[in-house]
Length: 111
Length: 118
Image (cartoon, rainbow over all chains, first blue to last red; front, side, top):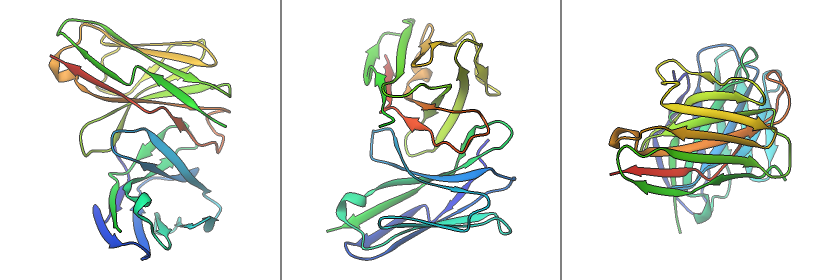
């Protein structure tokens, strides 16, 4: 069953603006990961944040994790048209090693 | 690094045909591989977890006899959709991960297989 809920479901912004996506989950986690999926393609791993970490950066990406609120956010700064894709959060279980994916946020960046 | 190749990328076949999909980790040894199914505009649903040299673990509601999984080596897992019917049409995606189940290792995904059953 899906445990992650993402907000918003869809986001449309202009190139250069920042995009923020939120993810909430229900159970305890080992880590939380963010993936990007271009239409009709597989998923590309963006960033992994461990349960004992609060913030992580990778290029124009910033991920935060609040385990007390069971939530995470992905910030894409200075967005580009090439950032147009679906973004999924996925929680990693310490018991099973499986990933449970959220419903995803569809991001459209207009040039 | 961490490239996963999935083949074929697109299959169209008649109802009743069995279809095999391959998932290969090209530059690392995949202790565990995962098979997902994705419907249009929806998220990924885990079908099964495949460990090298052992039987796959299927998620609840996934028919083992319908979706045969073989993980014969540390670089190859296959999913066979047996006697496929139109309701099996979907986008199937595999992923591979190195390390143990408790490791903080990301999963690396193939590009998916679009299966269309006529």
